[in-house]
Image 1: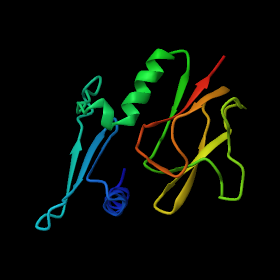
Image 2: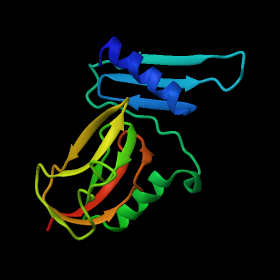
Image 3: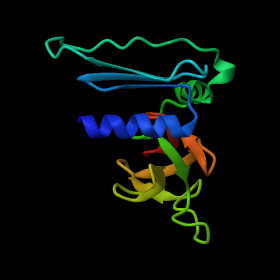
Length: 161
């Protein structure tokens, strides 16, 4: 991730109204907090993670389950472990249709194959097509149309059998 990507991410977070966003990859950790007080502005922390570590350790901040629907969906996934979860690769707005007057990309019960477009996610006025990396049948759509999604948030459950 280069400096321009980080600056664009900061601008996107500021416009979205989110108070805090954390992004972690194998080699970088970014935490963006926007101040709600008048005297404070944006605070961004960027931490380079050492590459010598064999496996990166990620600290998870515990939140009440009632306030985070993504955690509730993960619990559902545990109960249905035979399903594959398709997750959001980016933050943005989830859309099930290519445009308001078109049909949805996929419905529950549809058979999909690798490369099929499942949805689009809008990030900074760019519409990114999200393609399937597995073949199978759509079991559940976990996100409502036109809803904001976070990085790595579950979007679909797929039965690969």
